[in-house]
Image 1: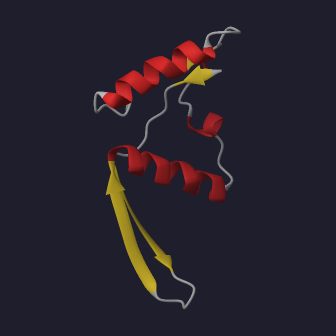
Image 2: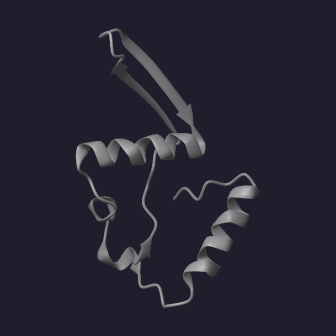
Image 3: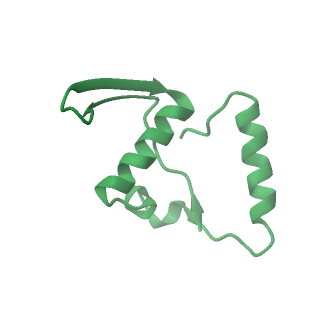
Length: 84
């Protein structure tokens, strides 16, 4: 299945290093989306947990995945991250 979900345009996180010192990191655009995605993994959240409505999900027909990836890569190369 494929569907668009909302992601933050920027992210700031506080974390601790291995010595217990609190550090703050953040980023914008695609890196912010990646950071949010990875935090979701750590928190046990799945992609489907973010979908606002089942109506926003679309079935991917066999053989169309490579076509979809090509479209997304071309969009990313133009500086767009596919945000909703």
